[in-house]
Image (cartoon, rainbow, N blue to C red; front, side, top):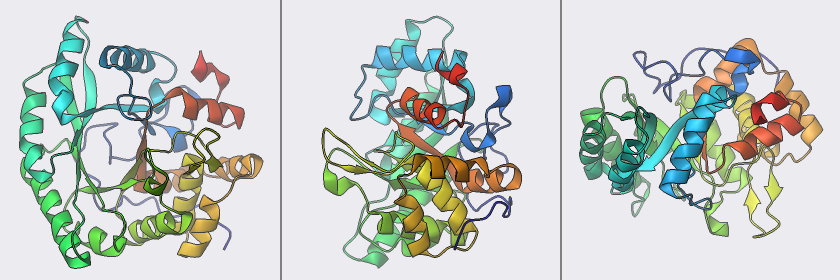
Length: 322
């Protein structure tokens, strides 16, 4: 089917009604300065993570520039691993008056959620607006679902009301079972879309199945890794096949309009920039709100590269790169 503009703008499961403005999971904030709502607060700053691996001081300095500059309407929180919170605190202490809104990743699993939040609370310059924890893959779908429920329960137990929680769904299992394990919770899903190896990148069919399952359940989600360019492409240095964030936005819209997984996968495979830009231009008003209520953001090790692509496609003003 051909995706059509429009669609429900109702908030998906996992959105927190008491979330802070601009918090992940709360849908897109009002877009100042003419920023299209489809891209508002879309880019979570993952400069510390591969392949960028920016040093802490450089990453913090750059993020503060983005928050103070024309990139601010499209820039989300700074993502920091729980184990590097003390290092982040020291970097901020060297900048009197500086403060950051952060999303904390918890690689230790559910048991690390409480200590991570305590570490953030001990540093007034750090405001944890989100926490992201991975659910471990089990021996079968039932065990994986149980692990997903355990990760969600840890977030439910420890998160303040105004902090969003994301559970990273394990790959290689039925996404429907994992998403169902989040039922009855306020937690959002997180999908891994790349990494430092070719097998870290899900196929179009795998990603479409997860997006479709989330759309049918109204479960909000974010994406992480490997998705810093607008369009599906082959990396010339590694040969890896990367998903495009514009493809994902359009595939989410297609799924919300009733497209099946094969149709959504076809959208994810699109490499025609003019066609993708034209389709994105039609997403405004309720349609854009519905897409962003489901697809809250994605982590990128470069804030500028996604913006460069949107400028090149004519979707945002070149002024954002000044």
